[in-house]
Length: 217
Image (cartoon, rainbow, N blue to C red; front, side, top):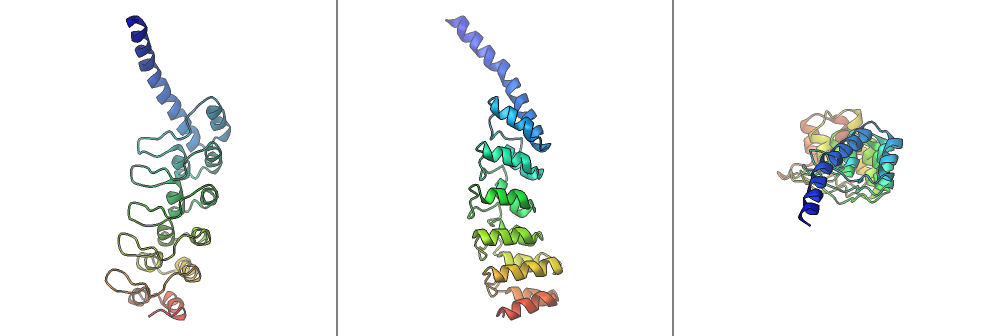
C-alpha cells in the first residue's frame, strides 16, 4: 500500500514538468497563430484556459499577439472571454483598448461583458477613444457600451478623447462618433471642466466646433 502511494507521488512529480512543458508549447502555438497545432493539442486534452506568468489566459495571449485564427479556435473550444489577468485585463478589454478590431468583433459575439472595467475603472470604450481606434469606438458603441461611463480618474471616453490626445483628424472622427453614439457633451470632469472647455484650452478648434454644434458649453 505504502509502495503504491510512493509510486503515485513520484508519478505526479514527474508529470508536473511535462504538463508545464505542454502548456508552454500550447502558448507558443497561440502566439504563432498556429490554429492546426492548437486544434490538435486541444483534441489531445490540452486545457484551453492555461495562463502565462502574468496570469494571462491563452485567449488573452492570442489577443496580445493579434492572433485571430488562434483566438477563433480557443473561443470555439470554450475559452473564457472575460477572464482577468494579474492587472485586471481581459481579452475583451485588451482588444478594445489596443485596436485588435477583428478579435474584438469575435469577442463581442461570444459573450464579452460590456460592463466590465479595467484597472482604471474604465470600460473598453474609454481607452479605445483615448488610444485612437475609431473603428473600435464604433463597434463598442453599436454593441451598447455606455458612452457616459466615468472611470476612476473622473473621465468619460469623450473627455479622454480631448484631454489625452493631439486633437487631430483621428480624434475629431472619434469625438464625432461619440457624440453620435450618445455621449453627453456637457458631462464635466471631477473639477467641473467640460469637454468643450478642455478643447478650447488646447486650441483644438475642429473638436470645439463639433462640441459646440452638439450643444456643448
